[in-house]
Length: 80
Image 1 (spheres, one colour):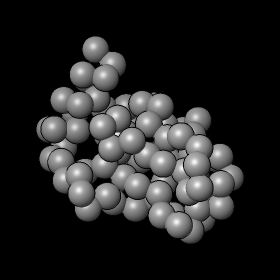
Image 2 (cartoon, rainbow, N blue to C red):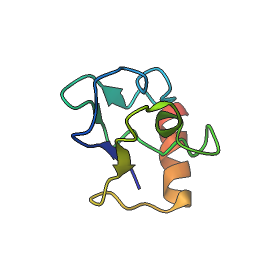
Image 3 (cartoon, rainbow, N blue to C red):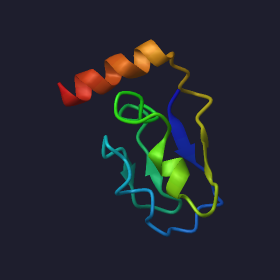
Image 4 (cartoon, rainbow, N blue to C red):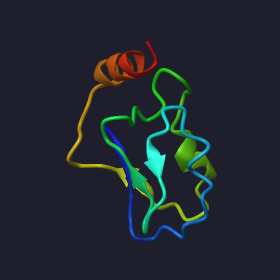
């Protein structure tokens, strides 16, 4: 499942650099592209954006439910 950033976002920019897939872009709130988000599967053991977010505003995106296998395949399609 992809992640999303809710309205509690403080626009601190902490999450952008932590994303191995470059899925996060600036906005109000910041936006995670669900087609690029793998919840860091393939790169890390847990979502890096959630670890660095001081506002705890990164949550599951209910519109994009994916298994670990699907997330792994997506990661490999992004990174070759």
